[in-house]
Image (cartoon, rainbow, N blue to C red; front, side, top):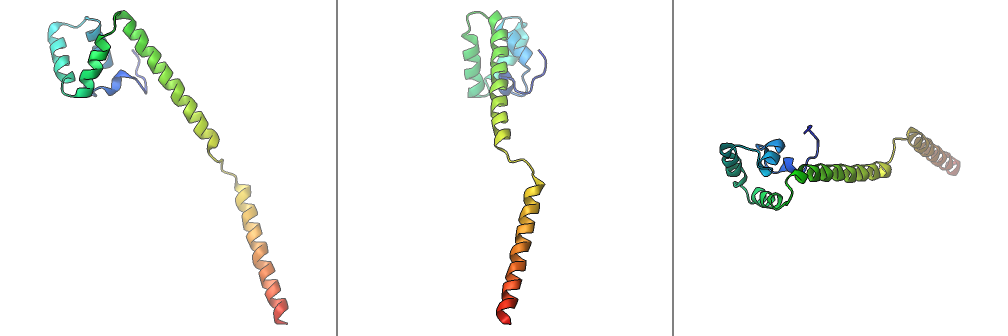
Length: 120
C-alpha cells in the first residue's frame, strides 16, 4: 500500500505499520509477529478497541478495500472543506490599500484647508 497522507489505520500507533496490521487481521502473520503486534496494540485502550472493531469484519479480504474506501472518503471530505475555506479567504488586493491611502490623504488635506480657511 502506498504512503498516504491521511490513512485511517496509521493513527492507531506510530510504531505499527499499516501493512503489518492488515496482514494480522487477514491471518497472514507468523505467530511470533502476531504476539508482538498484540502486545503493542494492548498498550492503549483506543488501539485495543480499534483492533476489536477491525476483527469483527466477517470478510477479512474486504478489509483492505474498506480501508481504501474510508481513506478516499476522508480525503474527499477534507478537500471539500479546504476548498470552502479557500473560497472564504480574502485575496490580496493591493488596489484596496492604495484607495484607502488616497482617501486618507484627501481627508487630511481637506482638514488642513478647512482649518486655514477658518483662521483667516
